[in-house]
Amino acid sequence: MSERRPAVVMEPARREEMAAAFRLLFQHLAENDRETRVANALKMLRDKELDPAGMLVARAERELRGALFYQPVAGASGLIWPPQTQPAPMAEVEDQLVNHACRRLAEQGAKLVQSLLSPEESSLLGASLERNGFSHITQLRYLRHDLQFSPRFFQSPDALSYQTYASCVAEQFHQTLLRTYEATLDCPEVNDVRKIEEIIAGHKSQGRYNPESWWLASHQDQPVGVLLLAEVPDLKSWDLLYLGVPPEARGKGFGRELARKALWEARASEAPQLTLSVDTRNQPALNLYESVGFEPYDQRKVFLRILK
Image (cartoon, rainbow, N blue to C red):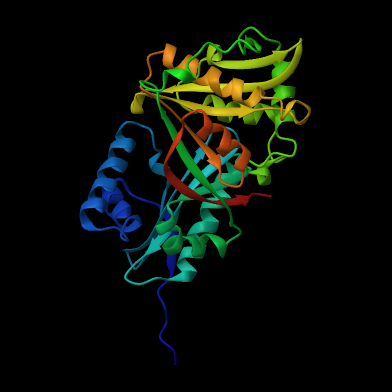
């Protein structure tokens, strides 16, 4: 007779085992890096930036066998950190953890789930996601601009007229934003998954929302783009959340004017840097940002699962 395997139970982690669960999640890292990540995660729990209910563990005979962290985010979305198991990789337990987390996120209103991993981490941790409905869709490149230099990029942009989100007709802003998604090269896989209200809520949740830092751009009284900026106090910087131009307005220099507007406004706020992320498939956007002085500093692979 074959040896009976102990039953595995999926449940939220207990408060006293949070540190152990995070150590399991980060077991692939060198000790110093692992302890730094654990300390940061525990601080984020204390600061209520992370919800402890998102730490899901697998237990067999009272022993911790696996862990995964997930979190719902505004905009009908969710984030997931891939599972790890001990004392050895256990695909069955990994699969149970991933699917349990996705069910919980769907119950909480998420329509899509993402995992953003470094290239090194994706080779170690991506398999459990791809076995369970996630696709590696692209890579994000993170860019930043040092706002203390390159004065030639900070001339006041005057080719377009602007209305803030606080002062414009919201419906016009929303419809222009949706038009910018048409034939987009930035993560087109998520198009038509969420309602405009959910998209707006997602943008509002990033950084410190201020409707005076969102703009509807027009040329000759016709909307030609949107620009969304947000202060990120923890990083002492500003972030370019989104810049988009609808199809009929592309190729006319409006994207460059919006990028110059972003630099002008961020520098006027005395932010030391402006950051953004862009899909590496979007070569026109990469060319644009690099032409106005942005430089790469990091990258992440994007794993995406659309929840039915």
